[in-house]
Image 1 (cartoon, rainbow, N blue to C red):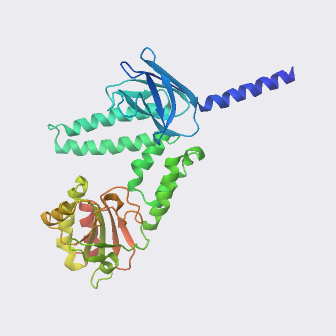
Image 2: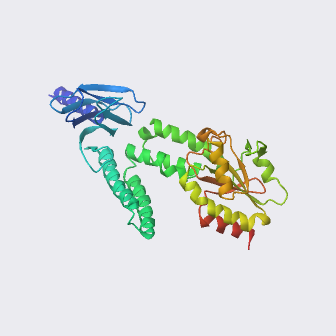
Length: 351
């Protein structure tokens, strides 16, 4: 009797472990191709299954958390839906509230992701409405940021939380702050590829946290002259240098230009300088933006888009990004936007 109980307990434990990693994906796809494919995050086929009577089904075990894609063809699909591969039953169904017209629900990350897509889609649609006032647009921006943050906090135990940290929230964090956030996730999620990549990026970003020494850059100006960041920082009379990463094709970057020009005009003679590194890849557009917007400070670029060599040492993943450097060569502020830049320089250099 005792042996039977032990065997039963072992069997139950084995079933429990299996269920913790087992996934099922069920979906409908009317007028689709004959086969549905499950692609991993490298766009490699994990599995395929026949679409019969407008329905399909995948089963398997979750080897590692990731974002997958289900589609009926790689080149010319009739439907495509992205989902989080996690234990449980994931249901793919028509949903006009999402960009692809389909949604995946049934498990924690997929339910939260679908809800997030629906809510952000509604906010974006309202923001794009010509009837929406500027005041309301400002509120929408705040609501969007709060929605992302709240969704992140509620999904730290699944891969949606990982994705939101890596692809949205980490851009405004210091390297040390990112590492602190990573430490709050489970060991399993910390070992996911997205998280290990983020950790490596954060370790590099730590080198440009506030208090760290700047890293020199040497790139050509529009007239072809090589100018180093070091030469600007060490110019006699220069007290603060804003290292600014931007591009003429970047809307948010160009939105910052009036704040840059005003700050430069009012404080350049008091020791403020700007070293602008452009991620443009078209010389005419780069130089045109400089001339049209009166960007009289030091401007350099290799015209290699995000492959600009300065992007890697400063861990630049998005633009605009900037670093304020003092005369001792230390980074004293990061990502000063809008009036914050003017107010910070005014505080440091006085009226």
